[in-house]
Image (tube, rainbow, N blue to C red):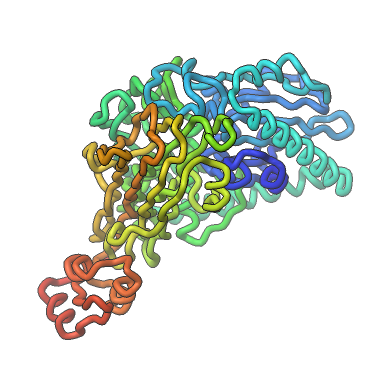
Length: 566
């Protein structure tokens, strides 16, 4: 199903970035398998299925395809439109297949949707409660035309065709498996696999120290006040072979678009939980059993479960803050599992007219990636980007990007010294320069960790240093310069405007003085670390050619006791 979307969709959001997911559920809505290119969408897909089944009950038929995105009936984001198709075998409902992905446009006040000026859900995008776009295999043209009338880009309806095609493919393949092996064998096998996953996870949690652990993170700017700060608070409780993540202490919802629906927040919690499992070498299949021992609590009316009619289009981006609060909470309990702070992503979304052909375009400025934090035993990956999709969503090809969008990528490189120092350093951030090649182009930011707004950097752990922050700078053709905030819309960029993005890295882990001198020297030679940073943070004396002075380094490092850092 995922491969078909990569090969048949028209939007670069799908075929280049992979901003979508595919999944299979059984008739009881248990996850059987999924492909999580955008993990925050994948782990929030099941609540939408619950809304779909609650709405239609037994009124389901072979050939139905149901659309849904409504965040107030358990969707994760309005632009993440999902398609749900029931699978039947000999007249019996046996499974569901799902495609869900980010649409380039879905109506609302501005193309692309990420407008920090919006204040309520109706301004964001078309709300789609559960509707049958196909009923018993027959297209509902009235509903198809209703959706098409509310989108600005023809490409969206073409992507929807591909998503429906992927659902048809999924239905066919599941039916083939059941026909080949029998429904009884299929059900018995999946029950066994789910139980196996749950057993693996419960056995792992049982080794974690019981207790109540508290962690916090912060979001800066809400689209209304650029200096407003909101706390995301996690109280994690480990009890035997189960764990609860309670976010009841999180601040109340924001007046702007920086609210996170609970389905999206649950997806973020599950990403953090998978990080903790993976750090311990636990590789359970991603099915219902994986999260059976995990409970999440979100307070209605809070930032992570806002009340109707709150704006929520920014919500997925708050995955960074949710994960950071979990990692800070569990650092005392699981010091060799937690990840140091990630750079909180700072994205850009552009919309306007491409002067080369006069067409309307919506696209993301994907070439600006921050760094993840280090872990015990390993540096953070360089320029991995947003926690909600890091490691799954792909990096667009630069030449393809330039062909498709009116923007020139002048440079894209690692930003030296952006990573937090440590025995294991954080991942590097990037420095990007882009030039606007259109007169009618607007842009909005969707992120955090902007230095000028007073954000806190990605935190180091156990003696590791904090990382750098983000800066977006606009250089206009007339020579004037301005900074671009983390949640701010600019209505027009003159042709030739340059956008400079300096992205921070991830936090370090452990005492930097315990990092091997040879590795520090090599990073100076690779020009990702300056000699000053090598000396001040790592106690390593290196010349401009990357050759380190052993005696001077030993003398410098001996000036303090590095301690028994992890």
